[in-house]
Image (cartoon, rainbow, N blue to C red):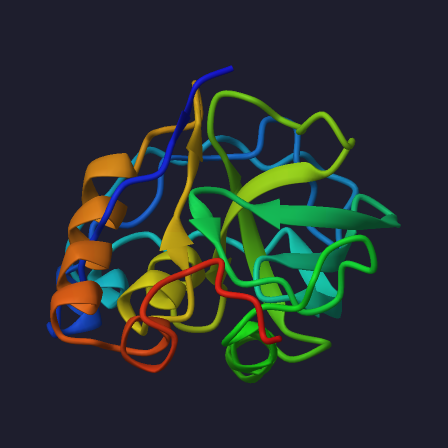
Amino acid sequence: MKVNRTPSSRRRRPFASYVLIAALLTGCTSPNSSEQTSPVSLFTGDPASAEALPANAVVAKIVDGDTLDAQFEGAVTRVRLIGVDTPESVDTGRAKQCYGAEASRFLADLIPVGTNIVLVRDADLKDRYGRLLAYVVRAEDQFFINLALIESGYAATMFFEPNTKFEQQFTEAERVARETNTGLWGVCGGPDVPLD
C-alpha cells in the first residue's frame, strides 16, 4: 500500500468556494431512519444553494484529532478521517506529540458529541484496523472537517491509495499552512515532533 505524505497549504477563502464531497457511504442509513440514503454526486459552490448532504451519523466521542466514534447504522463505530494525520495525543504505544492535544480539542470544538455529521467514503470502506474511513462533513452547515484540520494547521496530509479523492486540494491546503507557519507548522516546526 503506497503512502503519500505531501506538503500542503491553507487557503483563506469563504467556505462557499470549497469543493465538497464525493459520494455518501454506500448503503448508509440516516440515524433516524431505516431507509438507505442514495449516493450524492460531488458538488461545488454555496452549500445553501446546492442539495445538502443529509446526516447519516452522530458524534459519540472524539478519540483524538483524526479519529472519532460515531453512532452509525445503529451502533457506535470507530471512524478514521481520510487524508489527514494529526499529532498523537492518546496512543499508549507511542509518544505524545507536539500539537496533539490542540488538534483533539479543535476537532471536539468543530463537532462536539451529539453533532449530526455526514460520513462520506472514498474507495476503501475500512482500514486494516477495522475503522470506517470517511470524509466528515458537519451536517448543519456542510462544513468539511478534514479540510479544516489541514487549513488550520492541526493536521498534515497523509494518503493511503486508493483513497486519494481530495489529495490535490488537501496538499495545496497544507502547503499554505506550512508557508504561513499556521498551527503545528509554526509551533512545532512540523508534524510528528515528540513532546519530550
